[in-house]
Length: 159
Image 1 (cartoon, one colour):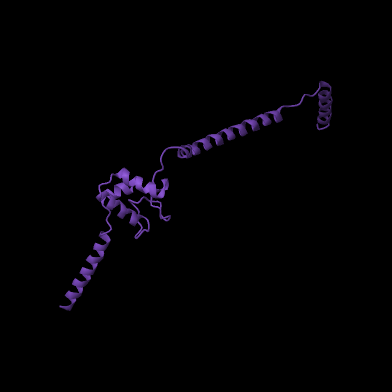
Image 2: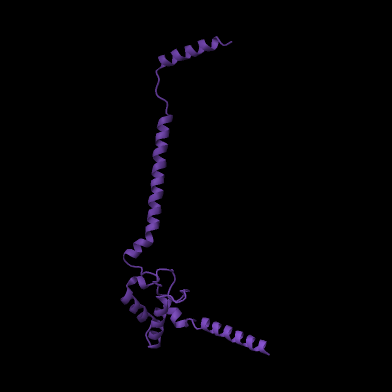
């Protein structure tokens, strides 16, 4: 009989632990708006809507603020604008495509094209130098005849 009470107590404790885990379920409205906002805890690179850190010092209060603003009837854009007003553009999970951010998006492509142009220029210059090095210098006929006779004389002694 005592064993049954122990089992029931352990089952109740287990259910209680599971319920506390389930209490952190994020409502869909908060998840939707939180997906537009970056978690600024400096530890993870998630959004407020999908930050998995338990007791995150940024996303937990942000979710509560989002939930209260949704309950107050604010639209998603108003909530996001409120966070941008408080924390600046860094609060957004995706920076707006304007100004310097556009240049940052194109910069890897520009750098790649500059790199390919530098490689092509390097190859072209080295090929020109190699062609110049392979070109034989002009030798007059008198010098060529002198060396030819010297070679024939040396080869005649080999037989």
